[in-house]
Amino acid sequence: MQFTHPELLQKLEKSGFSDKEARVYLCLLELSGAYPSKVANYTGLNRSTVYHVLLTLSVRGLVNEIEKKNKLFYQIEKPEKVVRYAESQVGMARECAERAQSVLPDIEGLYSAHGERPRVTYYEGAEGLLAIYTDHISVNRPYEMLAFANAAELRQFLPPKFFNQYVREKEKIGITTRGILPDTEENRTFSVWRYEHTEKKIRPEMRFVKEEQFPFVGEITVYGENKVSIANFEKGKMIGTVIEDEAIHRIMKTIFELSWKSTLVKD
Image 1 (tube, rainbow, N blue to C red):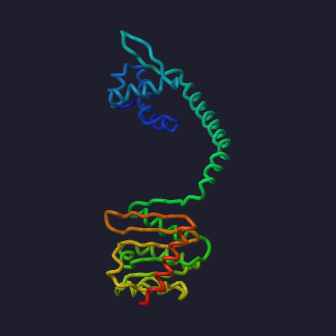
Image 2 (image 1 turned 180 degrees about the vertical axis):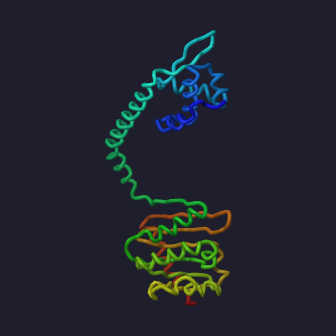
Image 3 (image 1 turned 120 degrees about the vertical axis):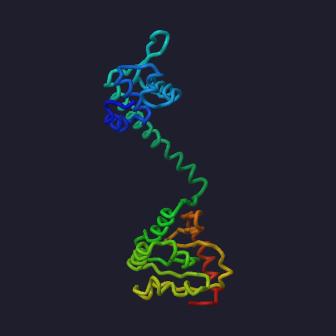
């Protein structure tokens, strides 16, 4: 059955009702009260859901129940109680915020006692991986980016417009790059492909390893002051992680430098 005042549903939801609560409340309002079976039929909700919502609204003081013909009949309380309930929620939220503020020093003390923890953020899908590359250029000072990468995979994954902007931002900020890549023709022409119009100092300095020694489809990037990103470009498994931690950043930087020194094949 269609509501006669469907525009009220959205207004009720914006007032703090869930979708189901708004449907049940508006049903009782339009019918001037109803039995649960009628509410279920009118709203399209199953009966068990209707009973649960009616109980929730009753506890909030927004509807009341009376017995009619040995059955429970529900109707809304005075409309102003909707405002009173919302105001009570604001008061409770304010009280919770004050309590949280008072306990914050204790939480911070216990947290600090266990030492700093790495901050790890996970990303999924193409949009998630693009967010990682956006984070590479979210800094406001120059730094050296270090990467174990495969330009062929980047070329297939990153949209040309996005990558062009990525390179322009690197140049604008002053981000220099060193990379270790599999030794393929496509990787050897990587700088020409995307960096030919940038300042020479911004063009990546690259070293290469035998292709069979670089089997993974993805990239590990050490960037910023304390971040490491790991991206998997494999179709159907596009995931990424950003680890924000000074110790891990130093470890990965050391691993890169050791690899760089032992890699004899240069661009």
